[in-house]
Image 1 (cartoon, rainbow, N blue to C red):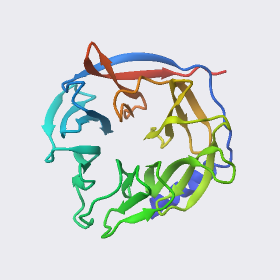
Image 2: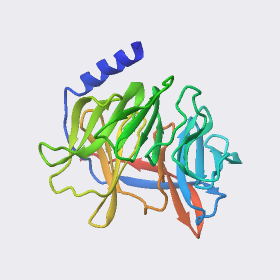
Image 3: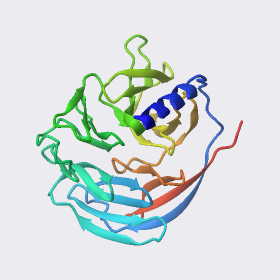
Length: 278
């Protein structure tokens, strides 16, 4: 409770100033890190980062874990034949299987049921399922699921708060807003342009300080934007071609990691970003 209260105080102080500003063109230095030993045509779901480990998983449950510090890798296989989406808890996979059930590192108190969801995200307070008609929140020791009607495109940050990207009914504009995990709006953080038509809209992952990464196609070009809690857009830039559902992540140094295809092989690439001011 104390950590949550401190976060609320920090967050509200941060929201006192709400500029919406984009810096000049972002420069990218690409550093190849690792050739992923999964075939590009094996329905790769993408990657997740936990501490200094990168997990790359395909829909058949096969995965490789790569250590960003040592360069060592380990191959493995989940206990199911099909995975829809996944995350990592204490170095172990938690996932949605082909029937919409949660598998892997599952809390014993959680109900054994199927969910209408296609995304799974771990937070400090529990588990968030989204992508269906409504989001679902499972607190760590929950014995039943808590549903969040009206929210579908959401992403958890620390201490039980979530980002939500949606069209605001009162203005007709798309916005990025902060809610608590019970579906109560805390603050309308960022308002997109009234010409923003988000084809291919996706949210996440979060940045090093809980910033929101938004991916959308504009004029047939994929754009990535990073938005802070106070409505400041740190940067907006051309993103990589969309090859896998979770193709972008952040390492523990704040660098962006990207899965790219080179000569029919999947590579983990570190994007070092430089943001000129002006």
